[in-house]
Length: 370
Image (cartoon, rainbow, N blue to C red; front, side, top):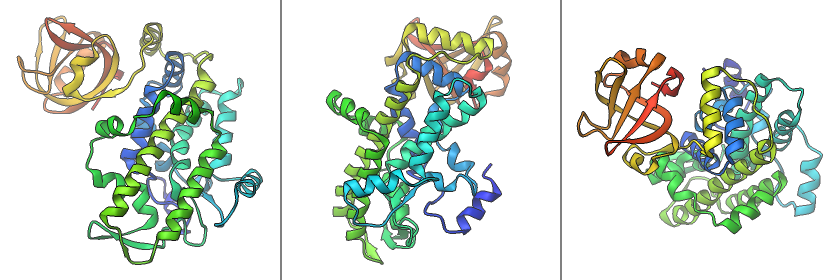
């Protein structure tokens, strides 16, 4: 639930809108990052997040924003700074996206920090790395990060900040899974270089882009297809860079780390995944057959189910025998069988092949979300 204080902060005119990069953008960044984690990092991150997927916590920092944390999402600067001046100004500043990223990483490095504090720090880091790559989050204070520069796009009113927060991405009409497939195309050389870059350089890149956007923006301007075609490619790159770099930061923090204690069921699941070198990721239901032997998260509608005594068989994508995936509920999870009819659920577990059909066996109710 979004806090009342968040709306108070919004009323004060901070340089932000409700969800930077939009829900799809932030979830895509988290999913791209998840794909590039080492197995141990994925294990540790999942433990600190108490089993929640990175994509599912990617907008938590926006949803829990208040007067104290609102400035953590952006950086206000005058235009016209050269690189050295930019670095000096940002280095001497505080209470912004740059200082917040450093603060979260310091919390995650501190061996004396509680698991709950690290849970929040991971959630913030997942989100703030995305914010740092949104050009209009490194922008001018006087126009509230472009929020007061009114434009038109798709025959609707918008503003420069909102255009970049989500309107460009939404215009593509891609699903979250297709965004990841389309955007996550970095070469090994690019991945290596991007992960060597510091948060200061991420922000410098955003500053350069926002400076260009300001130079082009005219109040009342109609954003045409030429603008869209040019800058949707920039959006692709910034989202991909954010995901790759988020993975890089988490790998630096956790690749050699030990996970905190978790519940017995969750510990078993995480330990199994780490041993197998598996990274949990979100996949399309139609593609589930390609992930046999891997642990994934997948969503789909329940079309039919059957209690066969030792387990409840739940069919996603179509009714038996044409189902795309069978979810076998065993143990404590079997109790969920009567609650799932006609619902869209998200299942996390290892995909196996059972008589030519993909199947996921669920023993912990926490592996299913409705």
